[in-house]
Image (tube, rainbow, N blue to C red; front, side):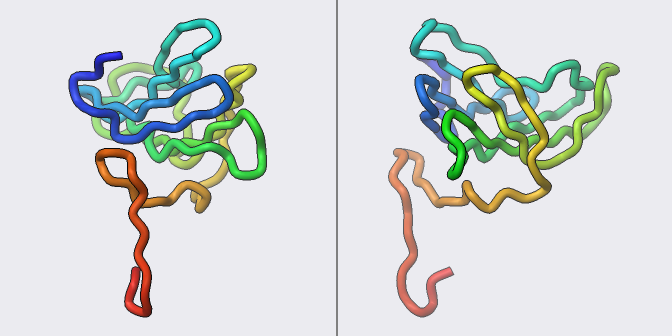
Length: 128
């Protein structure tokens, strides 16, 4: 796959690989399904169109199999009517494609990663 620029993040859930990518209107999540060989952007059904939409912080759910969590927010000029989804975290069931609102803050997915995908950890009494 060619993205133009390296993905901001990559997450594997079941037979899906999710890439967080930059677009001209914000950050999006691209779902590549290994079984079908298809790819599509993760989107909220019937969502209002906004100048900027961010789909970020993708991570596998810790206590549930086959579920991706991600953060969504939209802002700027409203470009089209539809449903206004709340800012916050959502869950995506990779088998059904169903997306549901999860919470305002999801502490599961915070990790520091370098651009080459290696995790960065801080150690010691003054680590933050």
